[in-house]
Length: 471
Image (cartoon, rainbow, N blue to C red; front, side, top):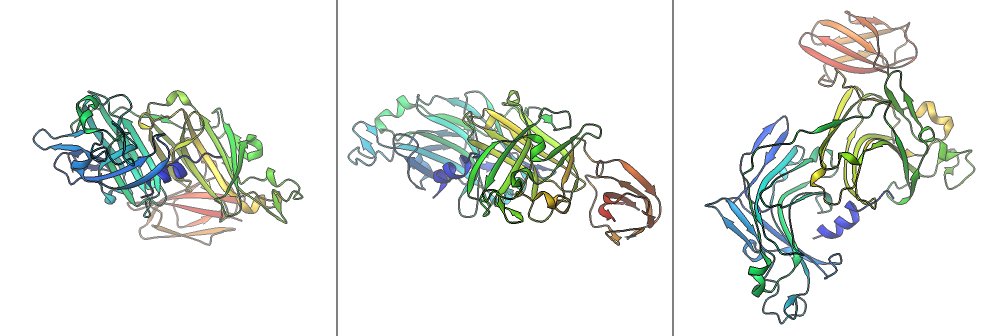
């Protein structure tokens, strides 16, 4: 299994479950809370490393009882121990080094429930006691993996005597997510059975006080203290080349304080005059460029952070991707968590990070990025942009398939076809300002300036959001 190898490869990329029954399983608005109880079907898996703790050796399924996880259904607890079975009788030098073990052993006991993919999942529980000896670590975790077992997300929190824990995964934001695991692990040198009493254990239960901390909501507006950073890749989009701070105006992010919006573009400054083959390939760019505009606020670490905002418009050309993101990094800029949401015209977004559950978290960044080939400045108009705001749009809950608008683009007249009679039509510019309102299915748009607009249509009990272009 590639679990730890992929942890190093995927999670640590810098820009360069005591299986138990689901106790108190609730779903509200695609948010599911899961807990682990002692009568659930458990999965056990082990990974082991050389004594340096980082050199991966192997991994395989392991018996729950051999791991040594003790299941107490009467008291609804699991008791998690260091591993003693691998040591055997102490004669195998692969596993034994005299009176001590010869490997660092990670024993995982968990539930695997892939039906939770696509939901916001909260895994919660409580640590009754943790008496593990120094050098042994007990944690609760959520792991999200791809179909071929590449690790895409790893959330963890230490098991602290007398404390509840809560981990939250926005699984729908993780591209390629196919496998969902949640549970517990104990990591440390595989132990001599004679040391069982001295090395202690951790006792966990599904029961919690039910107290959930209030999240802190953050947003990026035009008055924020913004940071700009660029990463670039070869044209395959995956081979990392380099990264560095970048001037905001060169990124090209336009800050409009009057309308409280940011306008995000592909990058044009790297192309220069087109004569440098590092950046230019004839009339097009020579690198895939990721331009990040964000706020960095490390004082928020330890809290539950929700980053919200709205995409007023996104007219970026095919091949360019714009997202809102939260990034959690270690002190040496290793990427520990990366949550994203696409910027979709007329839609709000919300990303939530349980920063207190991320071991080693030292840096919190939230903001926006545009990724695509670094562009020739002559193509600026054709490649479009994305306009974002901190304000939530009233159109966030609108359906997108209830109205048909034609012709689009329009020059003089716009026709609207709906299933029910039209009550009201409101037209907004890219800055979210209302520029026209009508109560008819035929709209005269001849006086509008050329550009992109959002139309909110109310017909009967239905509401729709449609983007159109005025030429």
